[in-house]
Length: 543
Ligand SMILES: [Zn+2]
Image (cartoon, rainbow, N blue to C red):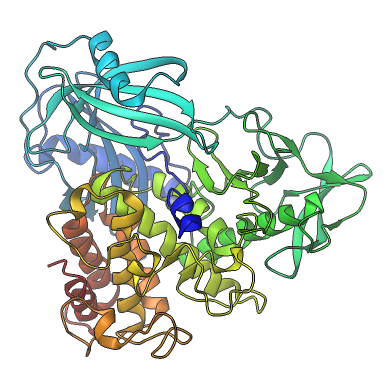
């Protein structure tokens, strides 16, 4: 389906932020955990694969109720970022239990570079083309996602694609062979101008949103003097901005004399702002209520949400650079509505959470896990919101299409990913490692569905309908006896795996291990939940 093909790049995460990683230690509890972990680095050289000239910066900490501490580190070598060198140190009572990481060696690259930065830019440019904006940049890095770390140039090209998606292509060029080792699309949008929040004296207000896809919803807004703004003072100052069909800049915050927003019709520019403002609020509440997480960064910082981006732009994306989410108008419903539905909002905001936790690099299997994480949590947000105008399901983006009761039109299907004619159902060692990230994400989505629900055909898709599903078609290994552990447990397991055990280069085998560890922590090694995790991964051929 053409519409689906144009939506496949739905949302992009800037997953790699080695240099810009904030040292995050907001609470005294976390600060103390980081200090304790820092003191363990010297005595655990072998465990963390430490080489001389390695240095470490803590960028996140999770402290369990029982006192176990998990501190996430970025690594540099001789001042260069080590891509794939990040790890999480797990400790209890001042003793290291173990470390989660993908780096396998303390060997470091041969110096010096044979290829100059300029040569690397030329090599990367031969892939990118000539349509870049601004000057390409390059920095020297250690690329440690492969078998052994190599010296490389990380070259970045910026541009805007024909479909109006901004692009920030990263190319990792081997500094000795000149070969491109890896590439991924982060994105680059406008730098934050005023950003979120209010200027001037404002007080919280409660308004009414007459949305497009979610019915009439309550919106948390601000009253500033005599005007209302779509700025949510109860959730970190998150603000919804009108891009007015532009693709650059941050647009302007929605502001009006009335605290009723939109009229349920796409012709009113406030209508989709109501959807987006609601969707981000629901996602915020989901993370806070279900996972105890305070916003995207865990320390309560609201983000900017941009709507009416571009002209007939049929996509949505997260950008780390502006710490913002952006939504296009589609074609205003001729074939697809503005991309502001609740699960899409949850998907985009979850990219921010991933970039501030595991930091899954947006290529290969780690990129697929990044995408799957956004689909999983976007779906869980839909269940959390429990809005009768948008009944919850394991389908992404079904509300973006009209006359779609059978959900034949959607962006992704978690229970049978290949229904979109693009995504992978089952792990395939020949293709999955290099598959595009919205395709190999299907394996993670599929795992999650089977874990939560078992090999149960969802209603509306069963025998006799267009999808013609059977339990045997829901699994890759014939195990139709697999039983689900429910959404709540599956959700907790994935979140803990993401925030405590996965790192930037985690692959599907690593995700299996991470979710088993998470489930073991939560429910026990011999629990039904942990056995179900193993069975669900096996059912998508991740063993
Ligand atoms: Zn995405």
